[in-house]
Length: 246
Image: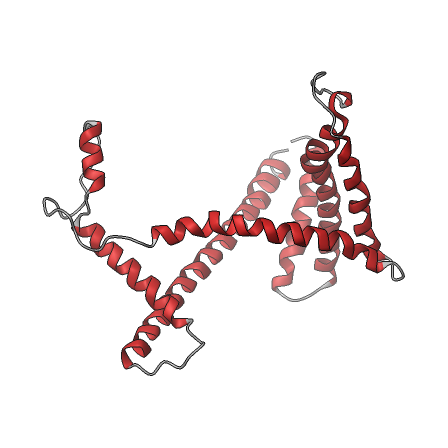
C-alpha cells in the first residue's frame, strides 16, 4: 500500500473510531468527525445534485443540441429556464427579511407532489389491496404442497399454477387472519363491545408486536453488518494490509 493510500485509510480509521466513540458518551472527538462527515456529505450531495439531477434533467434538455455531447438534432426546451428562479427562491430561507419568498416554490412543489401522490399511492398500494384477496379453499387434493414445475410443459405449468393446494390455502388463511385482525386493531372511531372483536383486536396487536420485533431485529442485524464492515476496514485493510504489510 503506497503512502498516500495509507494516510487516506488512516483518516478513515480515525473517522470510524470518532463516530463510534459516541457509543461511550457524547464527546468532542465525536463532534469533530460528525462535522467533518456532514461537511463532506453536503459537498458530495451538491455534486450528485448537479451530475445526477440538474445536468441530465434540466440543463441538457434546456440547451438541446448546444449541450456538450448532445445529439445535433435534439431540440432545446428553453422554457426550462423558468425553473431557475423558482429554484433560487428556495435559498431565501436563509434570509430573515425575505424568508416568505422561499415558501413560493415550496407551495408549488407541495401542490404538484400532492397530485402526483394519488397515482403513486394507487400504484404502490393498489396491487397490495388486490393481493390481499386470496383463496382460502383448496381446489385440488392431489398434493398437499405445490409441486415443482421444472421440466413440465407450459400447459402443465399453467395448470399447476391455477390450482390452490392445501399448504397455500393454510398460508392464505394465516395471511387473511393477520390482515383483518391488524386492521381491526385500528378501529378507534367507535367502541368495540363484542368479546370476539376485543379478542380479535388483541390478536392483531400481538401480531403487530411480532412484526415490529422482526423489523427491529433486522435493523439490529443491519447495524451489526455495518459494524463488521468497519471492523474489517480497520483490522484488515488498514492494519494488516496497510501498516503491517509495509
